[in-house]
Image 1 (cartoon, rainbow, N blue to C red):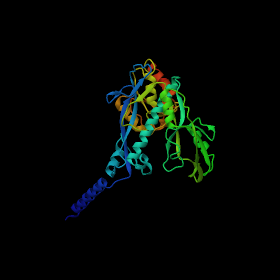
Image 2: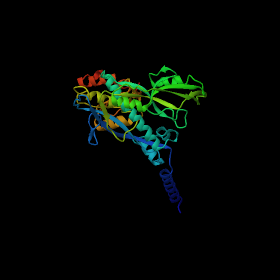
Image 3: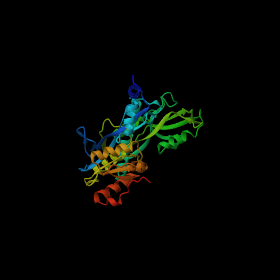
Image 4: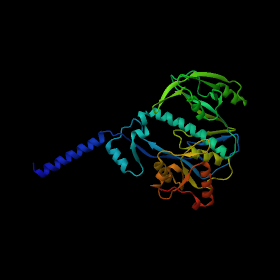
Length: 364
């Protein structure tokens, strides 16, 4: 066989071998891509996203779209060819698998965590919107979860209202951890609680809970940054009673990043006129009970998805602004927000045409 022919044949066989290796050898990466965007002012799957009863609701036009990111499943094994294609594709992003599924988290575990975060974001969105409208909301500290085989198991239950720890009134979830960790492991801590059943009955009957009880728990030891601290094995959260019914109907979505857009949608539905002035506004951002907007993941994918859908303005958490501004799609203005009040102010400028006054995202 002539040398040139042999060289070409060997090169071809090597190329085939490399392509096969690229197809069959998995790499530790996952892929993110733009997901659907949903107008919080409109319908999804045949029913309104925001359903409010017991209070006057106003018609709202325009768009206040929440945005999402699609990710490959925890079990999906990306090969080298797919990873290279994803790196080259402008609308996709390839990231280390552990970025999406840290500590070997399974698909089921990730879905459950995202569902819990989504539920909490809805509650905070309701509180933030009503506070912005000066509508009073009753709040209290509760047991969110109880760790299996912990000292608190069978002593405290999810939904129990924590009134005090060691006689000190609890006003926010962080107070619970602070008071418990004042103890040394092995010492007793006394919780004053309203049992979950009593709290639920009182809410249903429109009365103040009357039954309280004291629960003494012996703390266990947990190591944090090399130091031992006392724990009882619970996480504390906040529960609320709203003066009227607000339901958010949106299936197959998880995570906390829609909080800001839900809050704005609720605010718009409860006030006359249109927040957007009929403009297509999309956005993202977590929100807490006080209306503070926090950063999210996948900002690049979300702004692409919003622009593809037709958005003109994108409400962007301040901490995501620099990254988002690095590759902004043509025709989309990124508006920086730190709070729900910032977002409401930006929407006021948008509907009045004062867009030069908008706080825009920059790379600096």
